[in-house]
Image (cartoon, rainbow over all chains, first blue to last red; front, side):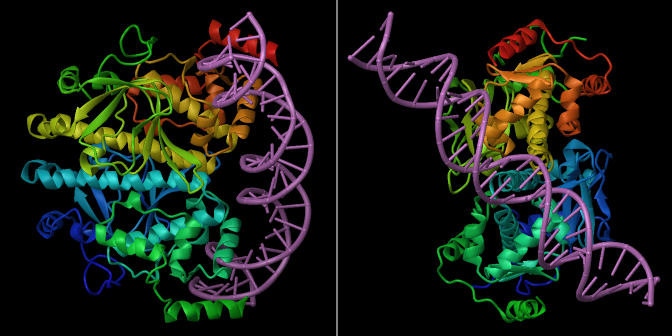
Length: 281
Length: 281
DNA sequence: CGCGGAGTTGAACGCATTCAAGTCTTGTGG
DNA sequence: CCACAAGACTTGAATGCGTTCAACTCCGCG
């Protein structure tokens, strides 16, 4: 069973603002094309550069075509907590359409390509395509559901489970967009970023990664997650994907795997990487 | 400077669905009245009873008139993590209007009065009052901002700061609705609920409450938070209220207090309670 | 060649959990 | 009216998960 989305399925991101690709269960091809026609110029952003500054009024929303970004808030000592992970196909700050500014910072975690969608263009949609306009509301609700899950993850799971859960989320969300298979996914962020996402220190994140590696669950190397045992990853993470509101065929595929049926075989790349890894340690 | 909202200002909750009272910066009186005219019958719910069950399709949204409720998700061992606190004036599950069901459970934490707002009624608003309809979207975004802050709180603050931060949020949100002054607020939940909100054990929550009490910051007793030193509470919590998108006059009032100007004097009740407490220990 | 960032590992410390035993209050039934 | 059970709260002591501090390797880059 091939991953959904277009046949290529493994490129780095999206060519343009494509809501049908990002939310196939939500936007029709023609609805997505209408939004695409409204997009502004694309721009490239370097890692560690801010995409959105908290408190600053904006007149356009950004959309992530390629690369990865993170929402975050820092405490008074400057220590950051990541609040959400943005993957290709996500709106970066759609809520600013109604709120006018963001309450948190958003930073590129990897080289990113973004494009703009002016608030004025969204405004026109309200009259011209009310159903489509409603679906943009729905997108903000889907993002909120994901962000809510982060509270659960960091509040009730142990360190290793938090890492596993974040990997599971990154994999499944990208898989649902046809951006990867089920053997692994891009995640070009540092161990420090990972630690800031999971509410722990980089040192501890490193140790938990070592445990997951030794238990043959997954490895995090060269900006990718390679999954050796997806059912095991889900188990370690106590992972539930209900909060992602996935299309039924994706949910069912994941359920099969969690039950231990039709486990995907680790591919060459992972094997080689594991071997390299073991040799070096 | 008196608290905003109606003059009484200190009753237990709202008489009916009143969006002007809940979001004075957002809904005009007449907009709020229009929504009120659409509300269904009110109902009373006992503590510990579920208001919303995850995954079950619903055809109406609920609105919390009085009492307190909590969003939560449980792990595989049944341990709960609260994901949000609902106070009088909050929509309980407005996102179900677009998503059809909730991804998390919602439970009454105290005796609650709720009323319904049928999805069909919201649907009509899209045509009849598009600006109002947009503001409902905005309400879901405000809720999302609060829930996002919970990730920060539990991820980057120490135990004591988490408790203080939650108290600060409960106080400020109720104050902004004229449901309390700045000396304290209702919070009729158990220490176990508090612990589940802050991602810690009940035992530890209890100890942190003891520290806050001994340091003369606040006390949590008989279902209320009594604040003896609001600036101190904000400091302990590293509290920032930007994420609440408050009306300017409220923000400015809070900023004054945080700067140490015009600190509100603790009132008789708190003094008495503190005395009682000390006597008993 | 030297520098800095990312990753890795060890050891000591400490915050929070866990287990346990209490108190106090409330509600229920004899 | 009292006995009793159940739940919320409190406190102590032992344990352990995660942090902190520190040293070191690896690698890309000027």
